[in-house]
Image: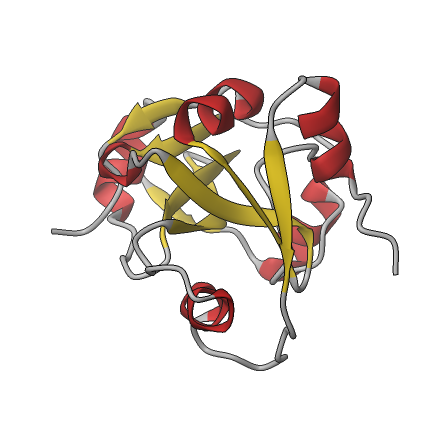
Length: 157
């Protein structure tokens, strides 16, 4: 199976150093990010999950450590809104061009504002590579730059 996805193509176009990590994706997992972290042997705080949200009806993308939960109040504030909620999976798939469990902040079909949890900063982070079972490892600073993201407080305390 080809590992080229819109996400990996976006990283290549940006000239970013990254490595691909494949694992056996298991459908039906409650916490996909935690499953991925365990499968690839990386601490869950370094494996970031990509969550599509709506803030005051506008789409956005939040990227947080796989072992943490979003604070919708903080998400709304991060994107300059009053309220936020999770985007329905079907809408997220249509908007990003990726399947749930494989959504990446890189190479989305329709670019939206992106914010990374500010405490997720690590020398290297692992993020979905745009396909179920494919992760990419790269520098946190490069991930922010390629996703055109800001670092904001997003997680529940």
